Image (cartoon, rainbow, N blue to C red; front, side):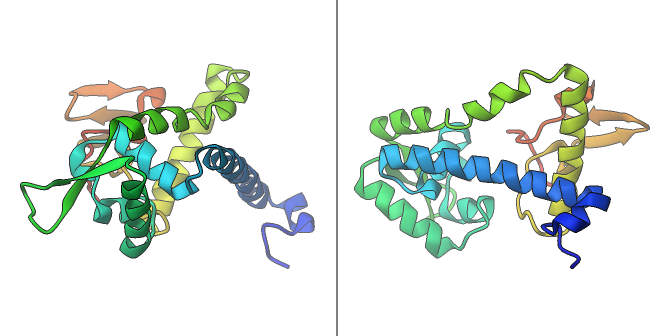
Length: 200
């Protein structure tokens, strides 16, 4: 059977092995996020919303943007926002540019919860410390390429990485940022850039 999860196919197909390896890593994320959610009595998506708001500009902290960010319906995000409002972890602020929408901000309590929750992936960084810089750069390069291709295919709906930005330019084997007016080394390619301007 031509499934990546078929062990017999994995023996002769490196793509299948990579897919299964990525699935195992995504499982680790799920486990760590669920562990954190049990500690806070919040759902994983509610925690992800708090973490996102903690690190991103106010104009991105709206229900419609969050729905695209997490590839969920507005109704699903709205339900999570209602719970976070009830728990007084967030507040809704009027949007001066659009009277039909609100900007979601963290309350003091919400900021504390978000700061603690944002550390949930720390256990995944520890194994990476054991890799040398060349191994990390090869891994990062492959992951960035994969994310870009998944974005182009419409599987990932929203990205703020260099490859999808109008300020990015490929110069031979080099990467160049027109905004910073500088060549970027492989390890300097951003995956979540605050100045990202979508070119897709």
